[in-house]
Image (cartoon, rainbow, N blue to C red; front, side, top):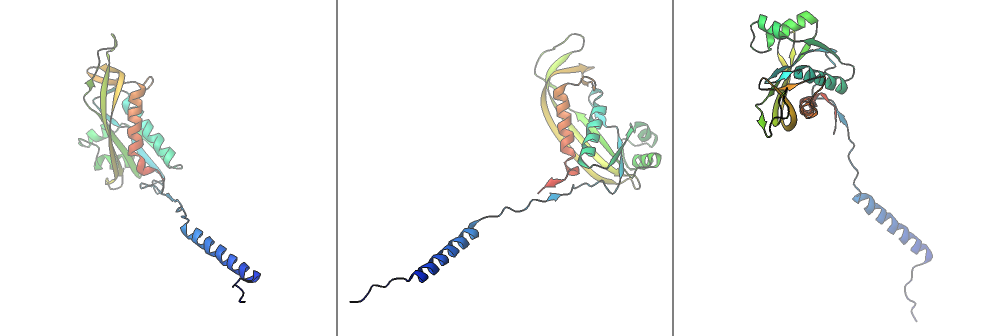
Length: 219
């Protein structure tokens, strides 16, 4: 009588080993390896300049100290984004601009600021507050206070002081409903010593947005 075909213990061992190798290969083939993340440098790298000037921002349709607040927040973002860079705050450039006959800060003003302060590049910014859209009555007697939707437009540029050319420009627009907003002479009033928190968040958000090119990002 013919014996049924059977595998010897040695052949069974070899078959089991081959099966394990095959399963292991299939498992490795299906496993996805996450790509490594790299830190991309900022689109606007200030290190070649070493130090940059910063002109006091101009503000349109607002009273108080919003210019100083926006300029300070912008300076803080630069220093946080690119450690080692020195920011020289130059104050207002209105007198220089008017002396040179420029309606807005331009090439001639940039060159003059560079010659006066020895900076290779200078930042300038303009913050425009839109007309208010009130949604409530007056909240005070001495200084009228209202609840309103405020829109703000921030534009910032970096000028080369050697040529007066524009090296970089960015802008952002944002709107926010703000309660208890002070009004003086028909325009919103901002105090740097006692700022409206919602108003401060609006400006801070805009500054963070326009400085995104100054920050390194993970990709």
